[in-house]
Image (cartoon, rainbow, N blue to C red; front, side):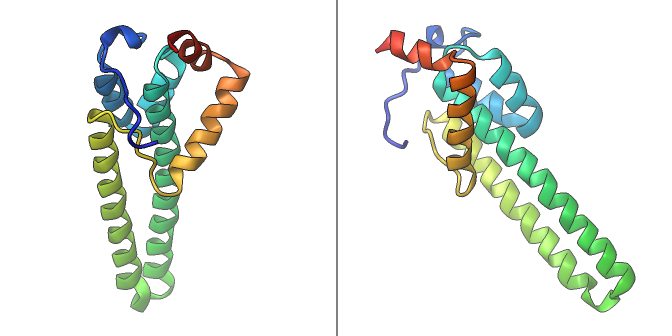
Length: 145
């Protein structure tokens, strides 16, 4: 949801930091910090969204990284002529992943709820299911309105 006004008030987060700083930290180490901020942040839906997106992005990135590494290894041993192509694919993936990660960090720090391609919608749906099961962030938003 680009364009939504996110208050940069330290009182609007559980840790007393500005939401952009917390969201930035939630994206720093995609899997670990995503889990930590999802578990500990109780007030800010903005921080929780970035934590969930970071978690989904990190898990997907690790899975694809592992599959591409396996492809490079298999291509290197079974079909050495395909190894350079597989290695190029692996390098392109790493550069794309790194670029998306930097864009996510920038969006979090500038208070934008930028939805990453493929991961943003999934993150929203997973966060909605999580909040429905454990209604923490939804209650806080209702109280703020």
